[in-house]
Length: 210
Image (cartoon, rainbow, N blue to C red):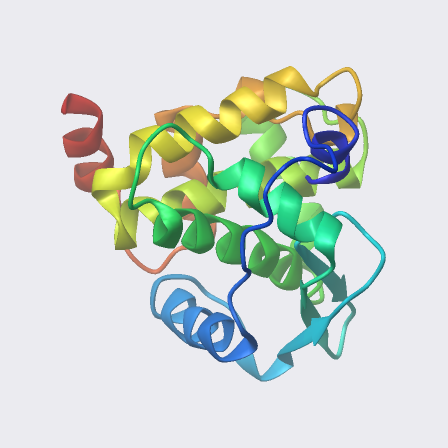
């Protein structure tokens, strides 16, 4: 999600925004688990200063899934650019979206999840993903948006616009992360139906009507 941003609009002159500490992200994991089917025993959250522009990096396997919060200066610049959505007080909503995005990668690394979910999403959207990375990034965006609709519904529309804008702007530079075609209310509702514990149809409809 992040490399295209760094080599696009983000530069050394972009301000650095602080990333949340691991305790905050761990709390987000537990809250996410109240709404989505995930084995939290597999999930670990760690801090890093990896030389990588990604604020969050996830290493997932069958037994464990590690979400790294990256405090490297470049990652802070990318996070700052992502938060700059033209509206104030949306930091929590963007954290919620990003946490859910990364945790979707954890879900997909559970045995038997990826192939069945990819087939279902392709059938629903009427498209074929380039590969598993393209599929998983698209699903992660949709689940991230569904989670925002549950925990910060007032921020759903601006977060949707921001994510869709980033995906569109950098689609040629980062085609495996181009989820823009799928980012709509119907896609979000379907992703929630596949992985969620609760229905968000009413919340999405109310948010869209604002």
